[in-house]
Image (cartoon, rainbow, N blue to C red; front, side, top):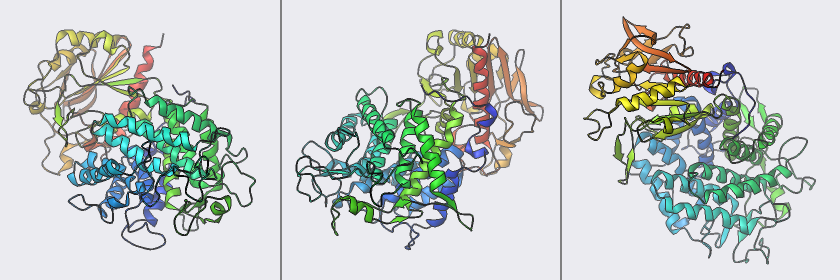
Length: 638
């Protein structure tokens, strides 16, 4: 586990509630410079399907997930909708080019599909996945970088293709593809890694026919920083998608460790940055480069967060990030934040021919606000700005019930999966954003698919039971019984934190669920309050004041069609409205319980896309998570 400095709870609010960070500042710059993807000018993204846009949008996506600010999602969708028509056809894309750069934006398409459920995004992403089925390969099986670059693997290509390949495989249960994904990284490292320095050459030509290729090894002559940055980012993004239970995932982790050690060695001691040609800091014309430095910061910080690198690498990331802020970030006379110091492009071969020499790399232009640099920086800033909050819930685990709420549904390809208030679900019905809030405070998310027992709750600090199924939801429903309720009761006594998010009369089962709730003096009434007509959201509004014991951040929240509560000792109300008890807490031994008759923190009402901006359910989610973490501390108090 990561060893982070412990920081006070009051200092740990997410970026949504804090002073605007550099990630948001550079996102604002990006959304201003490239507001219209259809416009062609020096400050606009290309009119053709381009990987540059994908780099920016991954940064924008990260900001949306951390802030629930609608403008970020809308920007992602607008950018993709310019290219993807209603039938899922990608304008300007040509499969026959077999350009692996074209696959990168598939990651944004997958997010849009998961969130909106629109077939067009699935079809467009499937088009890119199908490209990989017939992408030309080396004799071993490595993807060619492009059809026009036969027999060649470039470090860049791993970022363009593999994270998408991994996310698709996990999303659609194509787990057999994990072998191929791991092999792409392993083959690239085998052929491009320098044994002496541990650094990776930019490209490798299997045929050894290219002018730039070493006639013995096939490698290009130099260690280009951004190429290694692409490779490192690809590693951490793929590792994130591949489950830890997959045995060969360790191959990727070990590659990452070798990569990280080599990167650390060539970090400039004075500035914390990295040179464009990594091993030649004193070379004529060599310079510290912004996009690569951002990528290394991102890869190392994320790897620590994922638990696959030791925490010592945080110092490397912090030094690099501070160097970026000092050297490359500037604010102009108009108040716009800009990123200096990104090389616009570097490649191998082509017309005019790029020979991979040191002089060639030095000949490429270094510009301000290059899309690749800006996108890489936003991603790095997202990681670095998230670090302080991770300490708050470090070592804690929240477990979400999927036994009493055990609905399943077939996905678009016919695979049956859990749905309705589950961590993995990004659409309106899911708890993916709530899960990310827990993760943002360092809490691990798990799911319990069986009835709770002393044994299977032992490793959980927080247990959430939401919307117990009724027969109409799930004919195979699992009802709460005395045995399960007693197990949860004893677990709470010893310090567990229970969160009960029920539902209203037509949508949930009450008789058996109340067996559990009444253990803590809480009874869910068989009623339905806050009926909302259409988009008349004010009908579901509740207003909090500053004295609210848990929800001190939001002023107004939304709860639609809820059951009210009836309380007895030891439960107490924390929010009443018009004579009804809406929310309650109960304490028992070292543990605590929170209860409300609505699953109100699911994506539809937290991700910013539907509710008017003055509803603050996302802030409420953060407050509830911090409260739950705070209650778990009583477990170890003597």
